[in-house]
Image (cartoon, rainbow, N blue to C red; front, side, top):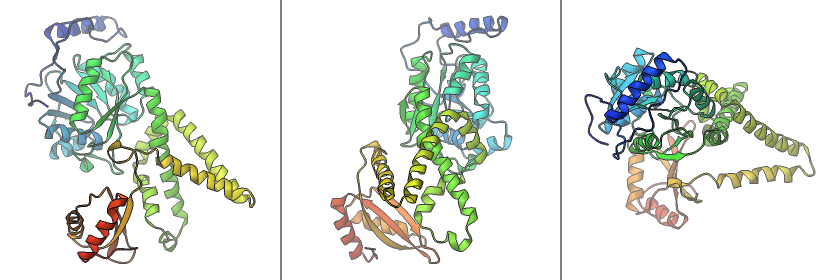
Length: 402
């Protein structure tokens, strides 16, 4: 990214700016008319920059975007209906409170789903030369709402970073939240390709991987890959309420893995699920059918085991479609389980010992023992490297599980 621009000036040619001013004059006299800038105006060959960015909404995603951009020398301004949220985001280095005197290069709307359409439309009407993008997790209905309010708009670049945490708020923001994460862009037939390229470059500067797709295709995909898992995690966790404390202790790492998402904000997820109601309902219908098949199989003493196994085997096949490391084909790794004391510095010492063997760690999992100050660290490596790692760690005094 280029150096910050303290004046936050508009990054369009004077001719295009004049075209926008004329268009604004027409709109003020004709409510509901086309709000687009004059697309016939010739553009400079230089890529549209993003030296000055306004982030509207300073929760987890908005604050994380601000922190990441600020760290890269971009001038970031922050707005939110909550002064406390803005103050928290600003204190964490996400930008400065308020809005620039002139149009920012890019406006990123990071507000809750129920407010997104209104804020996006207001931003497009307020900042007549700015590119406007968003982070809403569903796109079809949102883009339809924007198109209804502003027919043919070319400056709106819909987006969705597939990153987040089970905790919310600017206090949980991280400047590396988007590193190596997919960031979907779903431009419409009207979206200016230069505006799409501008947002794509901005997103890539945060370390994210840009994936361009259609809005309806995006919504069908996330209904299965993101929204249904949230529902399942929440319902399984809700079932634990019926168990006593002693019963819940009869659990392993698998329960923590499955229910981690259940700690997410229920108000936010209600908005997300209802904004993608039809695709999520279809995905749940499919899941309910699969669950019924397993249930009926368990009640069928003759053919039941084969039906249950078929459902479980389908899951094994599905896991193989989940992208592996760096988006490559998934690989079945060998696991080297190491017992570790729960005290400061032990993980660092273990990783240093692993590095000394010359073996690359592909993934790491930690399972904390119940009732004891120890844990089990599962080091995942390529099968051909497991022997060398195990031998090296044992020689260094580490206890390994078989």
